[in-house]
Image (cartoon, rainbow, N blue to C red; front, side, top):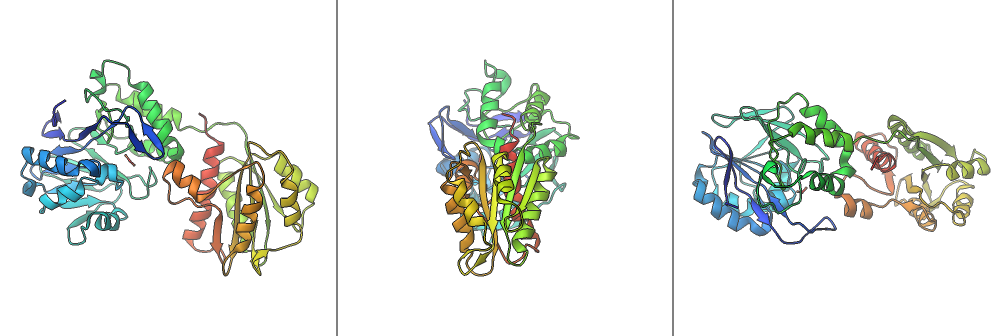
Length: 412
Ligand code: FEO
């Protein structure tokens, strides 16, 4: 395949095909992948995304055959993960007149990753447009799809969506357009969705709402095939795959509290699960009957157990007995998480976590979340210092509940 391909008037694919078996997010991409970068040779020439950092120098040199890098006016970075932004190290050094276009959260990341502290940045917000001299780009922020700084770009005149990781395939394609692949790409498309996107599907639903009024004639993603035929079929596939099951699910929340802060965490968890159509039992371990609590846990799909910390240990009198009893029960298939408020170091939360790890439930941990999904905004156990009053603390608790909700409500 050529190193650059015209995909629309003045619009070129300038990416890199990687036909190796690529290690990625604890997966091996057995069919390889592509890093799709696009050059819009307009009045204000614009590059949309780059390539993996390993191919940055080669990429910048090839791009220089198509355009004088000093003429590049904008570099749009939809997503800072290095398989998208990795070419910046080489490109920014050549395209010294270019302004970097990205979300606010992406600015410090790009500055640190590629030593771009002294470069011009243009921060765009949801719905902003940018005249690039003959074409207009529209930006939509898509936070957590799949990282906080992510956005997507749409070219109004050509009706092309540049959706970054979304609607991608991990295939080292022979032909760039899906309709020229010689085979149905649906399995590869769904395989990518399942492996990469599904954990983030609540934000897929937001994305589909955000693009539903756009007339999209071509999807030019960051990996694999460009889609220009049956575009709506692929968008509809994401809509279907990202739906939740309607099967009734239940969570049991058990806590002890010293000054009501852990109780407040339990309430935020409860509200968040209920917003996700999950039934919730909430138990104050020092007020409810132990048999009722154990029965509730036995009937739940997920169990959250929390405690305040006093003198480096759990508070209350009953929680430890309950946690001990859980050790001998068969709780296989249930999800579990620890939470709590603390003032100093919060040892009780770790004690609860240790007990949960002694059961046969699947206990959530930050390490597992980040390894399996790349999410950095979801933390387990849920540790809140003092009362959960501030927005960031409430968000942290809600993110944990939403993560577990999504695990429970997966329809695939
Ligand atoms: Fe294609 Fe988020 O990496």
